[in-house]
Length: 256
Length: 191
Image 1: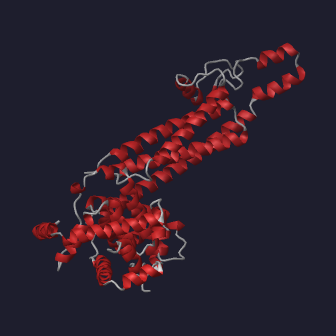
Image 2: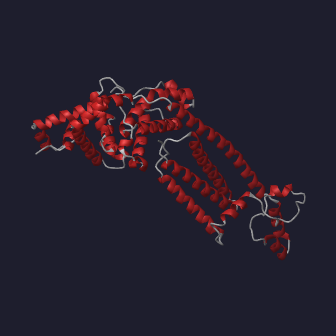
Image 3: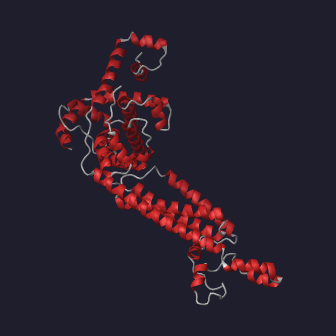
């Protein structure tokens, strides 16, 4: 019976093998010749010459590395600025006059006045305090049209998520974000060869997600209003969609 | 055992870890042939090998600060390169690619007839069998390690190695392959 290649390879490599089989193969001249041949093939494979890479690849690596580094530096400074801005806005919001007024009124005013002050449908200010401070008539009511960024995002996204309960939208955004995260992780590792522009776009998007995450952690930790956090989750979902699109396109793109 | 890997001067490694681009270039010069050779043989395509070379060094530079310095630098680089090669083999795009589309990797010249024959036979193996035979017989990985890298078992690696050697034997004894190599040799040498 002809010896199995797997057994001959085990014998060649000094692996564990049944004693009876070892004895039988040792007595078989064909098996001995085959082991010798297998040893020679492995040696020949190891002796194959080292290949020199073609020129120009280092330049591509250097360009991609530089682009990534530049993007990281840019994002880091933008992240720092944005984090500082968020911190400032949150602090101003916490110390805002209407909150102080609410507190004073709650403590001193009759019940109907309290209702008037607290009655607007939104539980958050209609405008950011900084905008209000810039108005000549800063004592005007807060029911003026809202212009802040978070609202613009909410308005556009209301087409997709318009449940009556904001907590439901919030939960759906978190779930959607997790779903996109999973899809991204299923794309095989980092993309293949890419030009510096694509690498930079991907790095930018990834860093931007990091920035949104930073803002989210801050907002969660400070218990910032649900609608602000919802806007951040929506931003995260949008950016992840964009990243998924770029990564998917990159994975599909034949290089030559 | 003397190292099969190129070595890197500790001073250059330290400079590279601090982000010095000249040091990165030095590391590339030292280790690029090793990575390119491994990728070329494993993927049987120069185009994919160039991709792997680029991806490997971008990652080496990006993660240099995580290298603890307690092992051989070449082994660390090789591990990254092997992972990149396996990722290429797994990717749908590569698996859809007909093997004939790939530009074969050929030795640069010299007494290359036998080498060419072996290169050709190696390139004709199914991708997984080719990866296993290279990782085991050339790179010295154990079946356990190969199984882990491929998300399979050690037995899978053993059977792939046996299958690879059976196929190599057929290809190396095949007169057609030999004739093809002899005919192609001048062309391959200039590739």
